[in-house]
Amino acid sequence: MAASGKLMLSSGLCQKLSQITRQLHMQPALLSSFRSSREVQDLDKYPNVEVVANPPEWRHVERLLPAETVPSPVEKPKYPSGWRPQRENGSETGYFVARTKNHMVPVYLHTRFRGQRRITVVRRVQGDIWSLEKDLRAVVEQSRNGKLCATRINELSGQIHFHGDHVDVLRDYLKEKGF
Amino acid sequence: MLQNILNRSRQVLYPVARTFGRSSNQGQAVSSESPSAVTAPLATKSPLILPQDYTDYAPVSRSTARQAWIENTDAVAERKIGLIELHPDVFAAQPRVDIIQENVEWQRKYRYVSMAHTKTRAEVRGGGRKPWPQKGGGRSRHGSLRSPMLKGGGVVHGPRSPTTHFYMLPFYKRVLGLTSTLSVKLAQDDLHIVENVDIPTGDAEFLKDLIAERNWGPSVLIVDEDHMFPANISQASDDLGYVNLMPSFGLNVYSMLKHDTLVLTVAAVKHLEQRLLYQLHRNDAASKGGKFKLDQV
Image: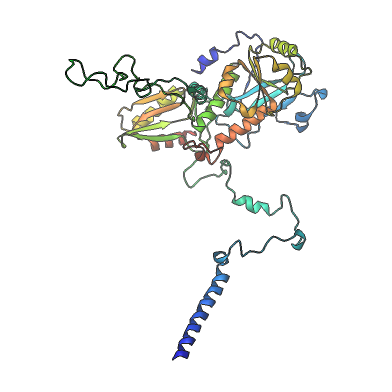
């Protein structure tokens, strides 16, 4: 009886030991400690290593680094997202709507009063902002079946505010015009 | 608005009108950039033509490239050494006078500490005793003669020193302030570009004559990329309170507006363009937003 108990104990100990060894092999970092690691030896004990500046393999690292600035878009005949590159430079229309640094059309929706007031903002307007406002207001009023639309112009900062949510209408129109 | 700013330009005062051409073809006119011309010594006398490189940062508006003369500093007489094309996003930006004003206000305030101070009823001397009994005197009840309602009493909600007025302007308002002010200075003919700041003598008279000859000033801010200026210009400008030197990393809106004329070296122009365009195009711009922390760099 006593002998069998000893056997069971030893078998349990064996099991635990094998578990630890397995863990040591599977997850060495879990049981490691800076105290258990080997101390730093003299440099001549280590194998010789050649330090290379700018090795060819570095491009694999560079591929993983995030780009610092927004790259210019790749030229394609058609983009599946519906995005279009800017074509117009504003020399004929007299006004110009610059793209953002992410190459998007700067039309935004500002909501205030818990979404009760919706203002569409066209930013980055250069040149004759008044004629652009006239054109855009006509587009918005046409989309509203002739109902009037209140606007506000900030010439200093190059912004036009439209009352209501007309982001899609204005963005599509500006893209169509080449801005 | 732009017209107003341009009208205030000092071209009327300065008969030496310099032309900032609008080149629509953006540097195709000066397509042959020779790298030797940049580093060539003065003796070769080849003009220094520095076209703008738009490969990294395409301008938001393709029609407003600015050109400026590069002037010499080795003699009092003005000589055009070459031509530099300036990036329109930095030197032809929309002159946002509102942002310039916010920058100036910020630069005045962040270093201002108000020392105005008043004493409360606890700090005014005396007043610990009840001046007269609560009842029976026929007078209103009071517990202290230093009560703020009495003459000679403490002040309620008065100014307490030191009161700091420190705050940080949002990062991109600071960036736009720099581009706006540089653009305004260029449009007002108050921005001059020189080849370098190696003047031949350390004599202050030379610098005075040079400034008078070229209709600079009265006050002049000279900006170079390096923070170690050459000995001659340091010595010459040392006693002139109205001529100041500044490295390009220290350029700010307040100093640009404080001085009438801004003189940039070619190296400073390149440095400013590179830094400002990077800030205007960087991918992690959102990381520059958020609350200012004291331990951030």
